[in-house]
Image (cartoon, rainbow over all chains, first blue to last red; front, side):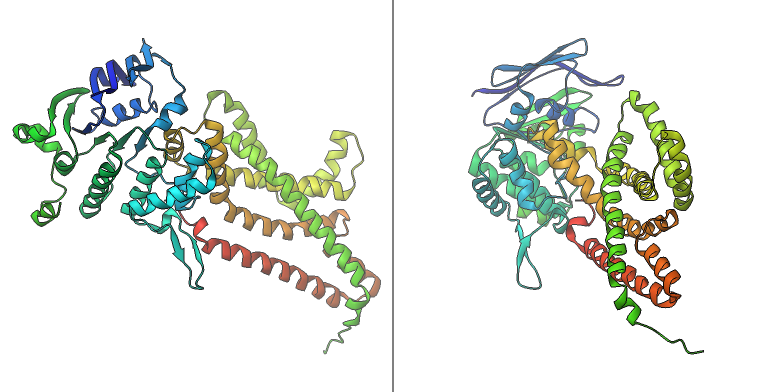
Length: 268
Length: 226
């Protein structure tokens, strides 16, 4: 398998707190990695580093064999076009971050039209397809029988997160970074997101790196599981061997079922 | 005592009323445009996070206090006598009215814009960066429309008030609508007719503005954030 990302001795500090410490990791094409661990251990920071939203203070990061950023003594040097890189590496956040002044469709087409400079018509068509994929209706009928664009405020939390997914997918990213995208959602809605992620995986075969504390994501979506603590990787295992490590008391604490209700488990 | 209404007066003087109304509208529109542009610039400057901007921000806050806190009538009369001394030019009442009304409005708008910018979460900017938008594009496509969206209802309320505040220009001899009524009253002694006529015009315009304002508040576009 080809290498997708490689981190070499990456250190990131927030003030005096070292979030990532001499962090090393290789991520391969077609992998779907679930990362779990206590908060403040650098999981989100790791994702933001891969997207260059966060700059590193030490070390280097490679994307498909090409060095994208290197840093020493707190001075980072970005070696690629930052915006071009970000458009190849999709990221979805915990808060849905949809732009409230734009309709659902415009939220999705913004990147394709203004960053990738694709034609408006094609981008809109694609956005409609993606809406269908994540099962969100972008139009609303009015009382007078007209059909108007829907805005983010008219959607539920789960729907908004699905639109955020569609927005990331509209850029045709080579990898999808998912930062605790279900943490702000109730268990049934989180389960729904998981279902859509599996659908997206079947359709696009896109590598994913997801920070999560839901064991279901590790079990039914991920191919590899990382348990991080204090800026280090404590457990790194293929997902099918998760059960061997699930006895690991700490890992189990940070990777829990979405709901104690077993009937929901059956549904997954 | 029954009052003998002479409504023919309104018909007789309608060109004067129309002229006053047009000047009132001109005062309103010009000072709204100038006040908005100036207010936007000041509001954006006030939101700068850089330490270098601090002295500038202090100055802007003094500006806002001065032009926003003074009663508008006091501001206008004071400027009428002070500006010619300061600039060493003769200024007529109309020019002073344009300046004073614009500066006063800009102080309020600067505050509204500052508040709107503070309300925009960083996460919206992150979401733009995340799909590779360069910062100028984020500014143009995300931040600016969001400022407009958040601030517009408050702005429309200010704009409606601005229309009412133009009446103060009459004190400086500007023949806007109220001053026109004054003049007609002096010429004809028919005060009730003259003032009723302009009261109806003011009510109609403000009523129209309020309808727009209420409609806007109901629009999904202006409802709270996602």
